[in-house]
Amino acid sequence: METEQVKCLIIGSGPAGYTAAIYAGRANLSPVLYAGLQPGGQLTTTTDVENFPGYPAGIGGPELMEDLRKQAERFGADIRYGVATAADLGSSPYKITIDDAKVVEAQTVIIATGATAKYLGLDDEKKYAGMGVSACATCDGFFYRKKVVAVVGGGDTACEEASYLAGLASKVYLIVRKPFLRASKVMQQRIFNNPKIEVLFEHNAVGLYGENGVEGVHLVKRKGQPDEQRYDLPIDGFFLAIGHRPNSDIFKAWLDTDEVGYLLTEPGTPRTKVPGVFAAGDVADPHYRQAITAAASGCMAAIEAERYLLSR
Ligand code: NDP
Image (spheres, rainbow, N blue to C red):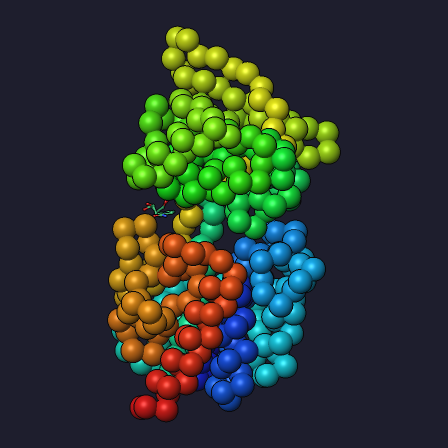
């Protein structure tokens, strides 16, 4: 198999990956970045980004990512299409296989492979993507001021998203498949005490409808039970909050993860337990998952990579 040696390999092209590339480029590390399955990452599926500092009028998600890419290229980052398909972090240089076709031997590796929001798997989620379906209330909630929205899920994320949306929307339905919430008690209390939030227990969303965007959701109550009911609920926005899956599979044999699969780093740093291998952005962040926090950790990872190379 073809091999190539690099000083700094960055895997992933979201805000963490590109910011790492900007810093590594300016530090003369000649970074090579593989963009992954979704070049530009999760933000390319968002229309307007209004909470990234520096853009008082907001900026389109794809446009922001394009700017970050150009900024990284300006400092010499070599940005390529390709997906990391295997990893060997057993000894330095670390070996990352790209597209099952080539091995990159890297002195430092910055893992910025992100996380993927889980969807229910309904065809309508794809049909209405960007037209009323979202997996990020912080990103898109603002567009539903004084409107009616539904959030799917019964965990802490769903409760947090429902509370956040209740501050903007006129009404929030929380669609929960079980007869109880999985979220922590304090989050549950917040939900039950909020008059704008109505919890629909034992409900499953099975489809969406609407002419020009989401106008409602098809629901099934007590699915499969003798008293099963099917009905339609008018809504303007449909938010998924059924969990995220960190894209960490190929690294699990070498690095520690939490029970969900998020990569574990030394607290407050992007350092993994393997010297010279760093994790930045959502793949190591179950808590904040914001573009700006991902970018910040990408910066930290590049600075760490530079210091690691200097110290050898
Ligand atoms: P969780 O896995 O905790 O919850 C996922 C929720 O989505 C569950 O209610 C689950 O239902 C539901 N769900 C999953 N799949 C489907 C499906 N196909 N159809 C309908 N419902 C579905 O994920 P979270 O993202 O909420 O939380 C992840 C971790 O992050 C947790 O440890 C959480 O505590 C933590 N967190 C903490 C916060 C805080 O402390 N402020 C904020 C956000 C997250 P079911 O219960 O039936 O399985």
